[in-house]
Length: 248
Image (cartoon, rainbow, N blue to C red; front, top):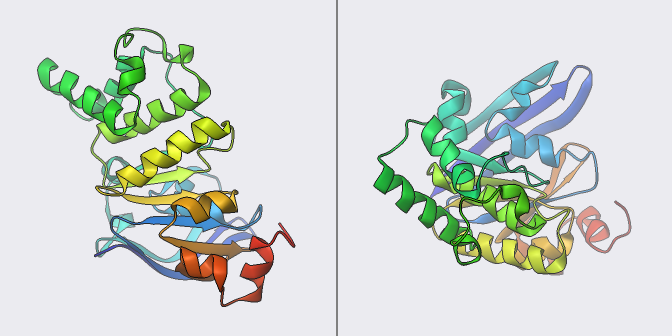
């Protein structure tokens, strides 16, 4: 099943083009990893999937992004961002307890009775592989967690509102190898029930977790294929050069 279809997508901010004529599909229940050097359009692309670029000045778009055959510009942004959640590079816990961090989105989107709320929070923390580490201190400040734990808390907060897609924008850039491994383990488990798009500057991470991998350069989609093929027999010399560290 195709989750997203991107048709001739071009994005600019003022006179600066961030994406040019991108065409691709994203399948349901896959991890699509997006790689490329700085200023290649990776983050702009992922932010197009839940319309976050619209928050920036001088944003312009041509082409179309469809979520399950529906133009995302026709979907209310609040509903779209509930369906397509995002986890950012740096953990951004709220200045609240661990419990209230996870409960926040649920309450914003209408709330649930107390019993169901408790169940949903536990479920989200379990899905983020954090429950066993925090179940005895849910009333503590989220800021008492380690960086890796804070990032998994942000994943749990995203999961709690019931998304269909999770966007990860370099979620491990500030984490140590052990925390990174836990986040990767979480993503691999989550893809059973969610579609995942991961922007990463770590090509080894892309190779470890991606079902398919896309290379962006200067706002253009250079190559998109099964991750194993991308890393062993890419079709474009630029892909081979980037993976081998010849530039970027």
